[in-house]
Length: 401
Image (cartoon, rainbow, N blue to C red):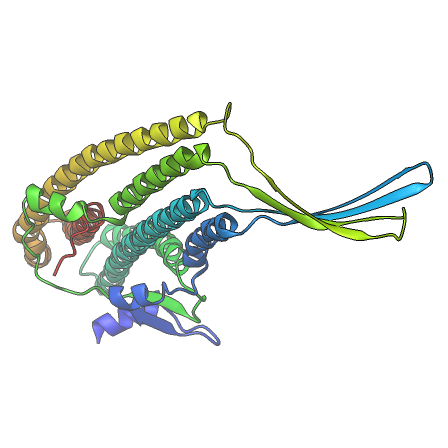
């Protein structure tokens, strides 16, 4: 009942709105293909896919009409010319464009994974902000109850007015902190909602799961999984595209003919009409595709260097985030065992000591403040653990069971 009262205080009913409780998996489900962020990422693939159609199209035919007249005799020539892409370049150009589409699709998959990771981080941020606001709200309620008791005791002459005034002052201080926490919670809610396909009605409330921390695989296993990430796949597709571009450049030494057919008529004599058939061929004497081959080789070398740089960066990120996750888990567990679990005992002992006259109001308020700060710190530590785990899952491609 007390928790329900706190939730009601933090998320008051709004006309036409209600509190929408979401788990992390339910929040991820709202990042659908209809989400503006995901649609913007996928649109880049459609743009690159148009290059495949451009590479596969045939050249347009040309129509030529000539009229020549001399000494009262006119000749009319109508010709249609059609280039014939028989060198094989068109096939390799289509293959290169298709490989670039696959690379763009892999990059889009990696960007969507980053979106999902950012959504999970926003969810953890919202949960931590909620926990802080709820704890401060509970502190306000406890202090108000204490101030009410002290007011009644003061009226009965059993306590000094200073105790009541100091407790009321502490209420105002915690209220100010709670207002700041409410602002942080609203900001975190807005950040989370920005990932959704549609803005939901009501206030979002993050409901965390409580899975036991899974053991982290060794760095070697995480790196093996990272090699299968879409980012590495995109570079492999880029390398294939460079290879196809190089093969296309190598086919530039093969002439591509142009077939010409038409009719020729003359006003001389009976005005007979004849046919025209010719074949035009461009001889590759000067342009033999050397610049295109050099560009393809340079692109392949660039992609190999990018893959090696990405591999080193991912190894460093996997190592650092794994170490951070282990360290943060240890700190959070030790803090929970040594501090958070004893917060209620600290408050109870301080309350008993105050009632017995062994301590003053300042010591009691300090015990309340320290215990509340411990619970807030525990939520922040748990959120930092979740952040490290999410980042490790993203950089390694490993998913926590």
